[in-house]
Length: 118
Image (cartoon, rainbow, N blue to C red; front, side):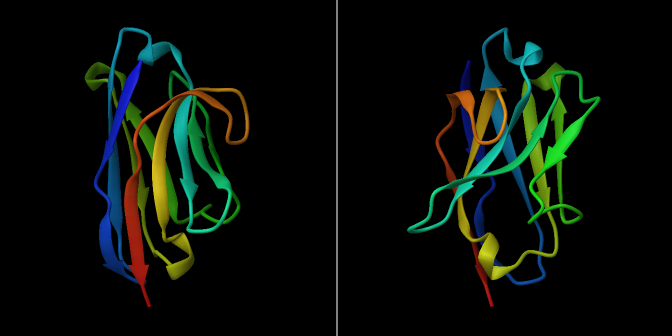
């Protein structure tokens, strides 16, 4: 499966952004998928994941209550709605597929940069 993230940009603290990830390949619908971010000078950090059928979602404590992950299998797409953004959310956000826990995924898209100004 191939993945392409989009929707990043510059936003003020307290603002919102919606990231999208377009997938190609017939196996997307069978995978748990999610988002991982990497801030400058820091290690990759798990953000959120969603089961193949959207029945369960998982979030890092740092984004719980502010971010929402969703997917549309008919469109081979997934999304990350980010609200109440903070400067510490600044990072490159990667969409990924075939989740095996934490920040472990088998397939990765290119990242999209989110910058939150204070």
